[in-house]
Length: 228
Image (cartoon, rainbow, N blue to C red; front, side):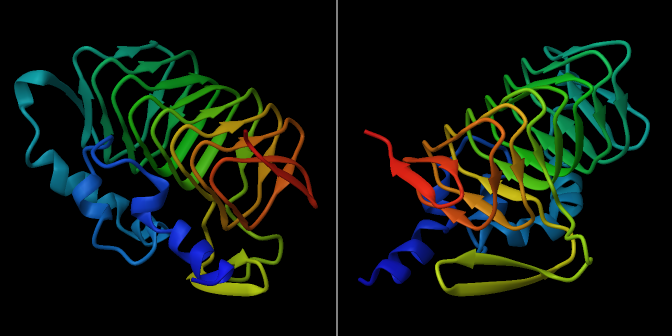
C-alpha cells in the first residue's frame, strides 16, 4: 500500500475511533468519511432520543435530554436537539447551542461553546473553547482557549488536505475531526477541515490544517514528529 493510500485509510472512522465510545457509533460506521456525519447530527439526536429511557433523563424544552447523573451549572445555556450523557459536567456559562451529542463523563467548561458537534465519552473541553461542526474522539482534551475554526475566510467549500491530494467535502462549515486520546494544546487553532489521528499531540499556540497521522506530535507547520 502506498503512503497516500495508507493515509486515506487512516482517516476512516474505524482508524480514528475505538468502537462503542459514543451512543451514536452505529450511525458513524456506514459512512465513507467521518465528517459526513456533520450533516446528520440533528437527525441522529432525534433518532437516539426515541431509544432513551425517560426515567433516566431530565428533559428541557427544545428536545434537550440530560442524564440525571450529569452535573449542570445553573448558568449553563442550551439550544435544541441535545443529549448529555451520564456523569458529564457542564460548567459555569457553558453554551451548548446544539445540535449536540455529548457523551458520558465529559467536561464542558467555563464559557465553552458547542455547535453541531459529537463528543465521544470522556472528552474534555474545559476552558474557553469553541467547538463547531466537529467530532471529538474518546478522551480527547482541549487546552484552555483552543478552538476549531469551522468557516473559511472566503466562505468557500472546505476540503481535507492530505499530502498533495484534496478531498472535497462540499461543506461550508466543517471544523475538525479529532481521533481518540488526542491532546490539543492551549490556544491552538484547528483550521477548517483538520483531521487529527488518535494519540497525537498538538503543541500550544499551533495553527493546524490538513491531516495529522496517528501518534504524531505537531509542533508547528513543517515540524511534525512521531510519538515514541
